[in-house]
Length: 266
Length: 364
Image (tube, rainbow over the protein chains, first blue to last red):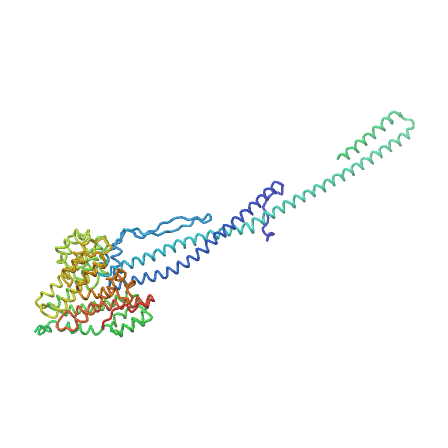
């Protein structure tokens, strides 16, 4: 896996090594934080799923009762009152308020239902007959709508949480399986490159010193040869001016000494 | 003597109605219906009585579609009757339709008040309450126009006259308008059966007086019970009580003063029948059993149910009398109850709530 991740395009320098190390540390901290967030969200998510299940079953029951109470109304009134109710309803009695809840950085909308007291638009419907059934039916339906509102707020939270959990998990996985291995790879690469450079440098120095030695040896040999030649010439000339010879001798040794010194220092 | 010449004009109609009565569902039919597993089964069981009318329904129809078709049958039978009748019988049958007309007009007034296209509402009107000038109501765009030029042309004009002005239509709750009209209608009907020379002293007067008195009392009691907790004041409430019936005048006065269910129970205690009802549902003890089929007492009967039951018994008894168009009234009420019963049963089946399926009223 880590082989496929590759590394980041950086120059293998000590500075980028430092940067990479900092990055790795940051990634690890971020990973553990995100992991915790994801766990918190998942916990919440499970709870919401459970509550949705409950609410849906409750809704099934309540809606059934409500539909049945409507049947009671149509039995008692013996006709269609739908139009009249629609027309006489002017103000909403049952209202919904929305607020936000913060779950580890995620804003979940929550709907809260409440009844506006004093709004009773069709209180007189069915005055002649069936009025009580109508009122009771209304109450039953108000309860049913309450359940629906509760379910709606749970469902919205469910969807949002689902989305957020997916994103967070994707990030966690990305950090765990891509960013961290890649940074580690880069660090490894930088380290190996740096080692390589060290070795190369060492080898180069050795080469240089070898060459110097060889050069020195060659120079020595040349000087020696030259000196021999001079000695032979002197022997041939016999009594050539000795003063120059004597002058020449110490000078040659001096030069040699100097060169030796240089080598040592180097 | 009174029956000597009845058959000259009304014999055919009466005979037809007695025939219709035999097609009403019996207890046996109902017990078959309650055994059904689906609406299709219900449709099948209704086949003998309703035949062609249900044939056009799609498989597994909705309960409202079923009820609609059943109402269609009632309407077509009633139209046949009214077409066959003459003289005072025809007038009597017209009176029967006024109740539906009130509902239709209330519907159209609601539409006009809210500036809806009233033409759409015509389809929602009850076909029995249809009269020739009903579509004209749609022409009016505002309430004043509706009142001044249109409503006075309708058969219901006398009921508006004197008790409702066009300002009332605008300001009052439509339910109050409806109930005022209904009160006037009931009083007029009562007056008609008692004073019309063809009916005075005939069985019609006997049975119809009794039925209408019961109807008036039932409305008074219902209005009182339903007005608790609403903005309807006691004076306004009192205006809605029909001014006849067994409760009138002492009972009505007490009803108008009643503030809770106990007050109502006290007000009606002078009449043995109603006292029995209230005792049966336990309203005298406390308000818990208040007219509910849901929250009602153990035997599942609410006050409303008991009233329906009583109405059905009375309608059934009408058939023991002869030489009277009142049988048409009885038959219509029985038929309406039958439609309600079938709707209830099919609702129970459709919603799979069989435990309360027996909560219908069958008198045969």
